[in-house]
Length: 113
Image 1: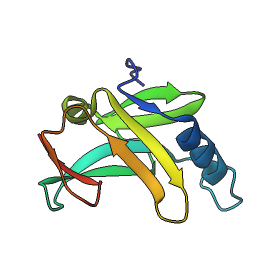
Image 2: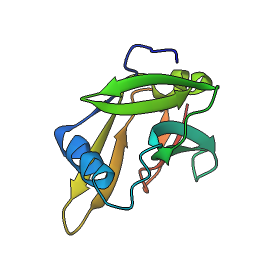
Image 3: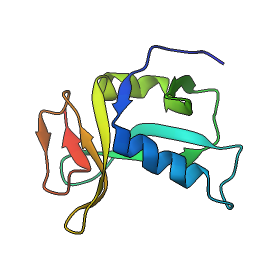
Image 4: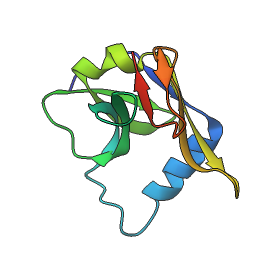
């Protein structure tokens, strides 16, 4: 398991929501938080945020005690990104503030570099 410098940050709200999800009875304790990107979305790339099993392609890091993984090749897209949790009535869910994005779309989950 290769540990790296922390490439992204989580706001207090995001940390609280992730910990809440991890404390659910149905949570699979063999999974960790995966951050990444995949092709698609209205701007070309979409963020990946979810729980998954580590693979040999992953780098491992920890944010406030939360074990995280990210494919080694995704760091160039995500370095310096901040993930937040919005819990309001008008906007609910995780949001991404990515300094590497040259363009984002209205949905907030798609970007271009």
